[in-house]
Length: 282
Ligand code: PAF
Image 1 (cartoon, protein in one colour):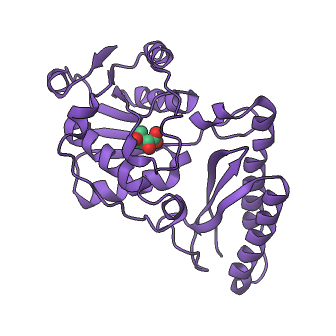
Image 2 (cartoon, rainbow, N blue to C red):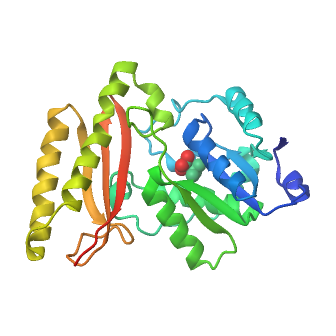
Image 3 (cartoon, rainbow, N blue to C red):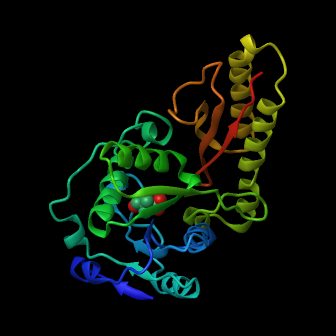
């Protein structure tokens, strides 16, 4: 694996196959590694960036606490046979950066973390400008993030194509996240309830066979019921939403692709998860 620390070296890397960028903030886990494996299955060369992006953290968020585990990350990348790791210098990367405004920002995490997606988009756009990868790969756990980047790439007519990969979960169902490391083992077990509830909601929607006209009412009832269940289990809900999975807007009766998304605080840790499902409407 070749380490790249500046733009000069980036320009001189040998590209034998099309290149896939996997942007990360380090503290790598199986979720990240699955993105590398996905790229390898597609015969792509891989470049993983490791950069804890200050632009995407709000003033009261956990930037300084964010786990920094570079040595372990590099070991994992070598084991995965990653081709390049890009560890940019803050000054070079952020110099004269074009601050972007993220689309689809008025929903879900965008509402509760003002400026977060602007920061994400600004940095990812910078990576794409300097690396010029054929592909970039994002996990679906950050569903809104990948949708925002996809929308942006379309808008600027980028040559970089976005690929996604399903959420990777712990055996108990908890979606893998660097923030899980802030939870004790028993708390991680309890947090698996998040996915159980999402699955229950999606099964209810899937099995809905009542009057179509009443579907939206049913969705509202489901949402109220599960908000209550989450609270009763000690989850402090930021949002639980059932929305159109393409636009993130409120559901309409005719919508087929539905996103069930949740963000909670549990034991002081922000956790997000989602299920995306397709309804067949007769
Ligand atoms: O998903 C993340 O880890 C970050 O938001 C990303 C895409 C690496 C941008 O800093």
